[in-house]
Image 1 (cartoon, rainbow over the protein chains, first blue to last red):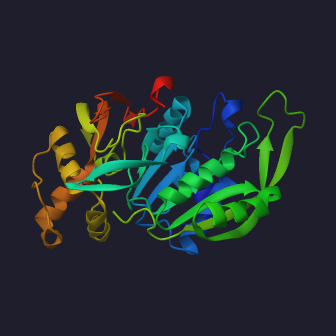
Image 2 (cartoon, helix red, strand yellow):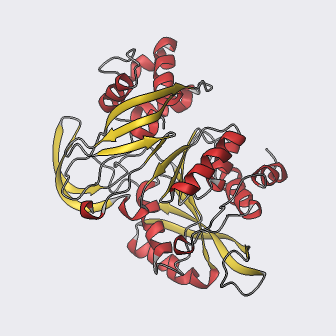
Length: 236
Length: 122
């Protein structure tokens, strides 16, 4: 599929009808979404035939873009049921299969010490207890996380979880102003073996909320590709 | 929700030590055909947990999968087709996912499981 065609299809999707300020719900526009997934697939082969998870999927734009580019199984996770309903409709409209799970990203994977039974073998270990069971199933995580303007640190919470879940790569958007901090945190604290800015994009935020004074605002965002350390927590 | 997703989900209620796998209560299951991708299936076979997957498929009304499976079985088209069908063509539309330790039900509506915890469960 060509980039223009992808962008055009994503432009037909329904977006948030009542965006929730506290969740920083902004649509991921077709311009950014198409470029993000197109790069992931064409430069790195991280999409087609893969299992892709869209964290904070909202109306499903990124996950659906992955589906359009040949992802074999796509899962969208979000805390908000209204968005997930819209995302379901979008998936139907594009005739794509996409599974949705309503959950809190903060509870996705947690650290704890436990005795866990893993298919007949009892193991005592620092275990990951959370909504997502430890495993290698998810290849790629794609996301446009909250920037952390409402819940401080939300952007990094998402990144931390993504690096625990993805076995191959994480694609994410973060404000350019946070570039150094994101890189340092990913490499030092979140077990990323690499953290690269693929390109800088302009994110057009339309006037969605009453407190927005300008009709439209333009934010510089970095498209990142992170690679998790291999198998530190997955050796069961 | 398809069973490949179910194989990834667990209950993370406070105090629960092993929330996987979630037991399926199926009220409405829908079948939707999708193209079989043999390479993908072989890849997934190594990654999923087989017994929870078989139990889940039976709860969804599909009884064709064997209790135990080996990679060699992937050479058989018949097995591959059954594996494909259970993994990717069965959708849980209405029902619940049940925590194996506490019995707490996570409802599934319109194919979407709600895994959000109540305040006292976090």
